[in-house]
Length: 193
Image (cartoon, rainbow, N blue to C red; front, side, top):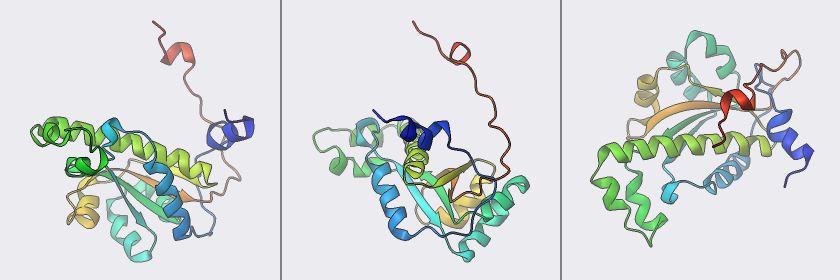
């Protein structure tokens, strides 16, 4: 079990930054981040998430027109902008990822099931990325305010991947953050049957 300092790092004291320090993230950190994310469980080990790490100014400028106005400054200031996507044809990898199962044929025969599974598990892997990034000492800003079609046209057209959300990664400037926004209480959000 994690001690309080581990829980603080991941949840209790972790905050979503509004501004970023000008400190780059090395490629080795991104590789380590993905290695941790890849270990998180997905149904049938389907692992449909795909990630595009935007680090260069050319990629940022391609992304800019897709961002909602309120997100431009916060997103563009991040050292790394990650497109969290999923591969609708993830099932082509299942013979390698789940060799003892006959899962590929299920998804290949049912487009709706494949899309639902890819979206759900890809989103789950994006959540793992948030936690893994915090565990590596990074701050994270999840963003859904963007034009999905523009992002897919600009970055994913040659892959067939589908964009889900963005994760800005870096070292946040935590000064002058407002108080943490309220959360729902257990009694409001949970049922025990």
